[in-house]
Length: 240
Image 1 (tube, helix red, strand yellow):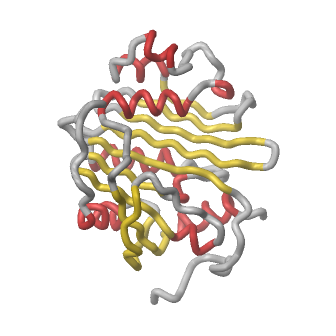
Image 2 (cartoon, helix red, strand yellow):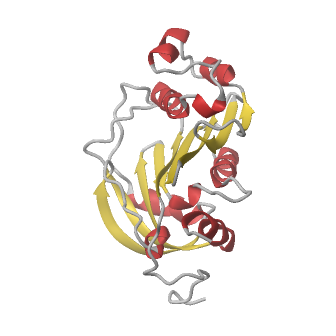
Image 3 (spheres, one colour):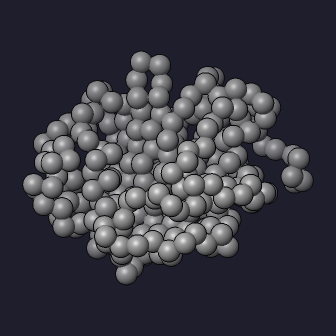
């Protein structure tokens, strides 16, 4: 397949009607901790990670470096083929719109588990959400190398959620005290539809790595998607 050929059924300039945020972070030991200092961005390491990521068939183009705090807008179908990867020593973060799915599959779960096999000693924290008419959808995955895991996906305020794992097991694995959890609004007794999943992900990530990305850069790549990623993204990002 040439670079000009595509698996998409939508043209590159097709507007995207939905918006969201989608981030997956891998933290490898020795964990720098919340007060650690991250290394400068490694462009070659970022490209290598992008090329091996499960939603990517091939990296087509390096589009330069941007501040790690800068979000990439998703306005058209072509924007769905753009990912951002920061590689700061043992901390790697990818922003990829393919991480969120509204079909029967859960891309964030699949990619996090694949990375857990690739980096068995690493912490993996992933979060993705999407604004939909009348509802917000979110999905989260947290992996601790000691074995604790949690996955959650569903619509805010609704009762029908997919949840695998125990919040208390994750809190214990990361050494998060009840006081720290309460201060962040994390209450294990809350129902999934009202639970503070973003806060839990933030606590887990902050336990092993600094979360301030100011002053850091990340690489932007245009990629060719895998067939599975295209099918999932068309179901997710466009009104069928």
